[in-house]
Length: 187
Image (cartoon, rainbow, N blue to C red):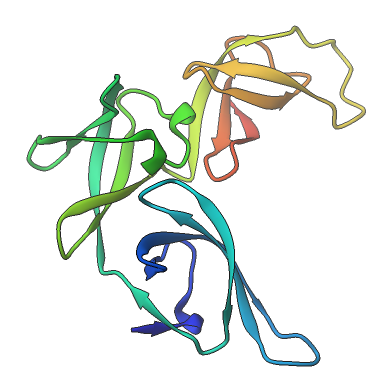
């Protein structure tokens, strides 16, 4: 058993007869009243995201999980297929278990979180940042960088990302996988 002081991003817990993963959290100590922890939790079975508030000191039932290295292979009508990097066995996950499936590139290394008690895969964690090539975007206008204006760009995985006006087709960009936002151009 853990308490609310043990809450951190990525922690898997049992709550309301389901398994949840902490997506965001904030410890709040109001000037008047008791402290609490405001969280955003994602169901690992349905993919539903909820906001939930835990009172300070509340006992939570955390899960013992293991992270294992896998490589993303491909997706089809069954789901997303991954290969274990140690023994080359393959598994597949449903789209709801993935945080940002539109940013996954074939051959990418990922971490799959398993429930250590019954060996069930719970979720798939992408690296914090990925580099992808821009396959389509409107051409930028030289010198048009005075404002923080952005334009849509399609990357090699098919995802659409908002990028600055100076990004052109063929440029490699770094993307934050937590929020899917452009970080910088890669040389």
